[in-house]
Length: 501
Ligand code: NAD
Image (tube, rainbow, N blue to C red; front, side):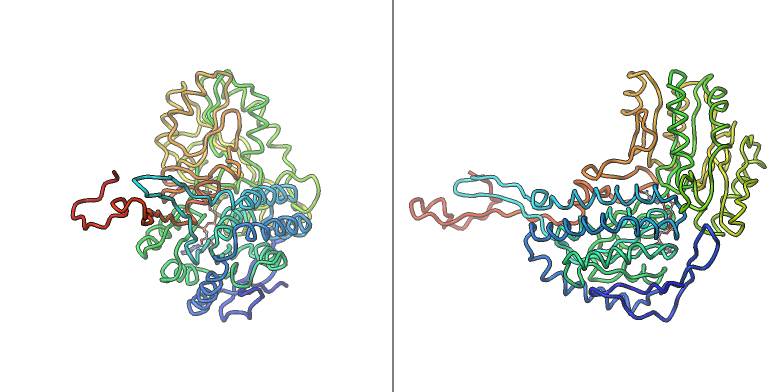
């Protein structure tokens, strides 16, 4: 049994009074207990982080970047261990866990370029003898709150850029799979990060609420479900903080009749069933245009039935379990609702039995056909291996459906028509768009974020928006008295709005 407490000021802390069990989804066994920090404990960590910020913000960008270079090397050296922690606690297969770490490391690589990224703008001679320039300075103590489904990658969307910009950071991981972030905290210390710059508090609403309302927390990054994202955004904003709160999704693939069907089906299998559908960029709806639906079902169904589902640590599995017994029940209930509302269930993952893991939270791939926009399984995020096919008469109807949906995280069009693809990119009301690419997750040097009820706040995560989010801009306008030109030095009082001459 593992006991996970907090990581404060460069070391592991004592347990909190309240604790919670966490589980290994593939076996259903309790893996350990995680401490739930009290408001007083979190306030203490904020104090430590505030102190650490005073000196960390004065370290040169180059030296901050060097710590991240070392951290990257340490993560690579410990990749197998980190991946196994993810798989044991989340359930995703090992290769997928490694993929998540690599996508997270790309943000570390981006943050290593911080000396370049922090450069301000400079204009010589904005007025007679006057120069102007900008500084990008750190905010102070910033916090991140992460979901269970990417226990390494989502924290890495946040903290590398935040600390590279000179902030100190408090991470609140998901209480369902807390170990991998704790390991990253150890690696940051080993990489030479000064104590108190990166801290982990485990906890629930009490810890989160303290981060959202405490006067010394300057900014909050959140990734999780939409109702909680809305709560985080409204509460932290009302307390004067910068907030970026990324929420849920219902990502549509628009399948045009001219698409390369083999390519589309291959892409769809990974996008719908990879990580058991527990990805915010998973495809959960296919809009099959015209006649494409029948051919799609014919090719898709045998592949869904052939999915290898089992313990993610076993080589060559396609899909692991869901995160918890409660989530398995929730997703299974959605399947039942789909049947009751009249959708045609072509593959029923509830029939799956993983013989050597009877207590694991497994659900096989599910496929619904003839889903309609009024159905619950179309409207709501399921977050499991459940794919819905909606038959639509033409491209315009498909586009309208996507634009009418409350979520706008990701979408993809599969087509051979440049005209259709271009129209789609320009007119779809979604934040991240793929053209013959099923999961269009932007690379680390671009920014990640959805539209509509998939993101609250003006800035996306990582990339240029990440640097903007974690810094405040200062504009300086300077004039030095010139002995050769006294009038330019402004010796006379002026009572009108100053304009540059
Ligand atoms: P969640 O909203 O239940 O939890 C996210 C975090 O919020 C956790 O750290 C949790 O402890 C905390 N939390 C939960 N309830 C809270 C409350 N009442 N008050 C304060 N804090 C609370 O989400 P989850 O189940 O861990 O993750 C899955 C969700 O995350 C899905 O909806 C998925 O779409 C979304 N997600 C979105 C993105 C994105 O980029 N848009 C990425 C990954 C996951």
